Amino acid sequence: MIILAGLFGALFWLFAGAALAQDSRGTADEAKAMVAKAIAAFDAEGTAAFAAMTAPSKTFVDRDLYVFVFDKTRLVAHGFDATLIGGDAASLADVNGKKFGVEFIEKATPDGAWVDYVWRDPISGKDVAKSSWVVSHKGYVFGTGIYKP
Image (cartoon, rainbow, N blue to C red; front, top):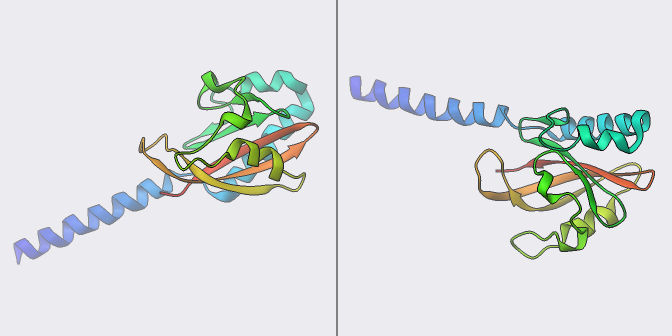
């Protein structure tokens, strides 16, 4: 009986831990809200807002969500990795060779669109499926992605 109770206890904590880990992840609605917040900051401050959107600033970072911004060809803000700034969208490809940087720019609309690809998860450190919400606004593409582990 004690062994059975211990087994059920271990299973409970295993599933509870998985649920808590999922709770620490951003949702699709939260990603859309973060992009809207970034666009509002850009409308208020112009390109000066990009500094607040770029690491090490945490203004536009929430758990595994972070903002990124492209002009027509290059990355101009990135909330997780500032070393990517200035990188050409055409050079961004996932582990499967998908040119998702180009797809961000091609698929982004004023109403927004989702782009699927594989990217390094900042929580697990593994390459996992990701989907980014990208919105075209005044010559820029604003985006935030959700990880789907």
